[in-house]
Length: 152
Image 1: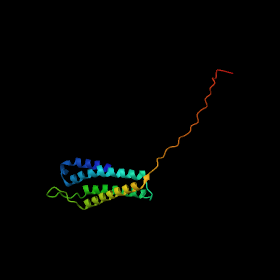
Image 2: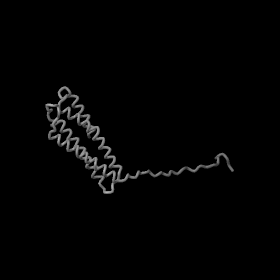
Image 3: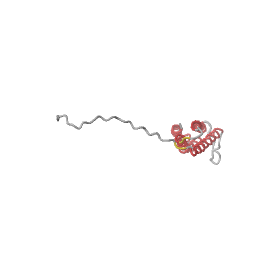
Image 4: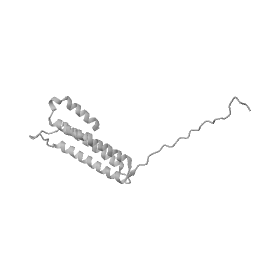
């Protein structure tokens, strides 16, 4: 979802570059590109870790659901922070955090919690055994050693 949302946001901002350039919306979106590059990549690696490792407590499915919900929440909170309430630039050019910014920060904190929990589960688990496909025995046709032209 974030891999689709970030380019879409980028196109919208680029099409409105004359009016939005240097505005809080542009600055918030620029910060969100780091989330798309690093946060989503780490989330994907965490999901692969959860999928690859078996845990002894049976918490794999609940961790995967938590990670899915947290990632979707963070992406939607980032969209809201960018387009609904980016705030206003301060006198020193800084961007104050608004209400939607706090929600986005909460999403990033929960994403960090997901990554920590995933690392604990994968360190306590063991790798899932690889499934090796069974060889299929195909009967070979019988080969005669006598020539059909020769009669004995």
